Image 1 (cartoon, helix red, strand yellow):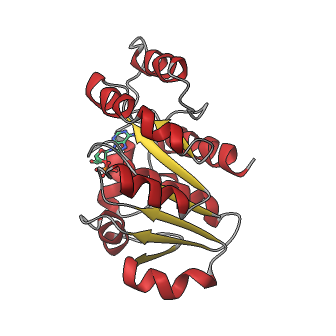
Image 2: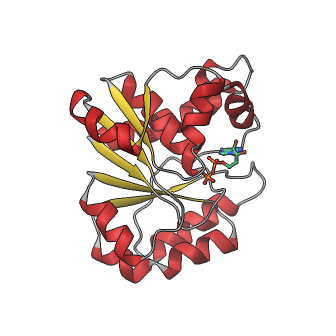
Length: 196
Ligand code: ADP
């Protein structure tokens, strides 16, 4: 399975999403994460610590891809219309992380016409969702569903342990923190939705 992660805005948890989906998929079969992000976030992450799957840059990725059952591609932020279409063509599912704030939502809603053309090929993932009693996550989901945009049932909560994972260079399920398993469950639920 090839999963591509792309975002309309920076800082929405795109690399964090690519990395944790790869962690989930690696539990099922050998997985390669191709770091196509110009910031090289995933490669930096793996250089700081250790990740349970193979990480490669785009060049290495081309020659390695055939050896892996699952491939997750972390793409540069802000694809334009043509790039998005090409990205969708080259994968089984395009995962688009979006935070539930007005600016990120507006960026996603602006892409609605284009997204219509790649229907069945993409799903929005709500990320960095603030805790209760803040209702931003639920409100964002309603807004997207009202616009007939497919959204993952599970969303990713805003938890500081994700930043700790990045600092330590490991996936969140390997961090020694009381919130680690809660954070991991967010992504494993998304992984289940993808594989089902
Ligand atoms: P992008 O690839 O979209 O720029 P990153 O995955 O690099 O985003 O995340 C941006 C920042 O937000 C990083 O500091 C990261 O650790 C933090 N972050 C990502 N997801 C979460 C989350 N669910 N809760 C809290 N912080 C998060």
